[in-house]
Image (cartoon, rainbow, N blue to C red; front, side, top):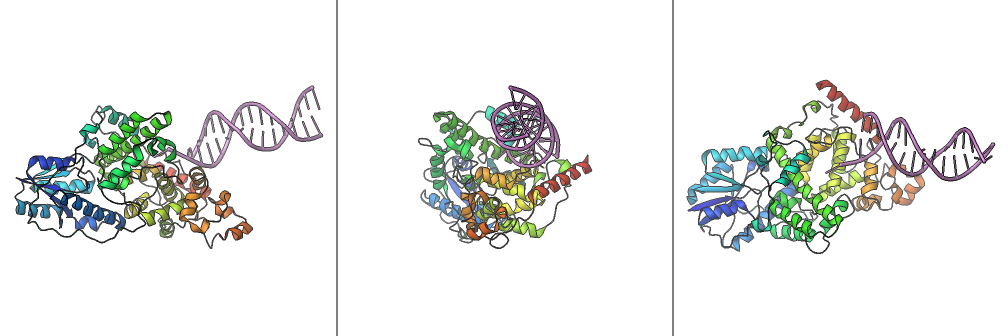
Length: 473
DNA sequence: TGAAATGTTGGGGCG
DNA sequence: ACGCCCCAACATTTC
């Protein structure tokens, strides 16, 4: 028999449960990717992420060809394209890795209504349905969720599925070319593909004193490459969550110091946060439309297009915010600490609806994921599950001084601040005129004056949130 | 996975 | 020598 392996966000041959199931089911397997016009037209899709995906498909196709197979690409509604391919091949089953976003679940329901679709695990280590409180309801607080997650049997290295050897795929099937547009800009610091993902995981978590052993402290530093930067690979399944967790646990066992143990535990927690937000979006799909907390649905947002444009362009006058926003638009990636800082600034200094920021992030992040991105924004806005309390407002100057103490990060992305002395680099508007002259950085001319006064903005936001709470209680 | 406002303490300058 | 005040430094509360 012939089986279809429907590739969606699992662009890998190793530890791929859907692929393994397809190979176990039939002697011939057809790897297929469906370009879904509805997805391509979405305002939540961006060119850099699309380019990363297409380049990743080319790598996958090359890996498949090395095994006597290839990737079949079709364009159209998945249920129609898969039905056509089923007719062409006589396939009696379609295997795919389960995905849990509202769009993915609707799409898969449409396919399953007429075709033999079978979903396998792999996007997360623990399927979102599997982690529930004793009364059967889903967790909405991270800590108990993570406790339950850790109580389940952990994946072991021996559980990781090897890449298949030869894959027999019928030769006569037509395929469209993998799109070569948009092109991945050279500024994007991620080489796509499964091989690169594994190289990075190894560099991060293996060897003597690898970065993961310093992760607990370094992960917050904007000026240090202390994070794994694996998110784009996890986003498209060039790496499985299971592979990442196994690596974290093996690094944990190898940890010789308290710092190293702390680092590996902290990184594992970040992987569990990812699964937490997949589960939240699965159980509460309405969070894509509105706040999780009903009492914060009526915040009187400022619909300020100009302020939003300044935030997008990295021209707010707060260096740490602007540097991060320019890093995002140029490279498609942003440090996690920086994501919190710029999100806090948009929501709590500019009082702009977090959904505007959520959309901008999805348009620019190579790793943009509906669950994690939504969870992060609702966390910052204080509207989500286990969110930051509404009165927690980041001070962009203090955050800059704490996590970019020498201003190296800020100067990297804001060359106009190159000569600004360290004591002013996170608050250039305090430079005396003579210092501005010396630094060749006139505030309001070479670099913007602050878009809002932080102290004033903080109070405006506290009042606005208080108003929203009052309305609904 | 904050920060500001407010409260407390204790060392040292100074009359 | 003593009490008073100033104000870091730290702690606690509040948003």
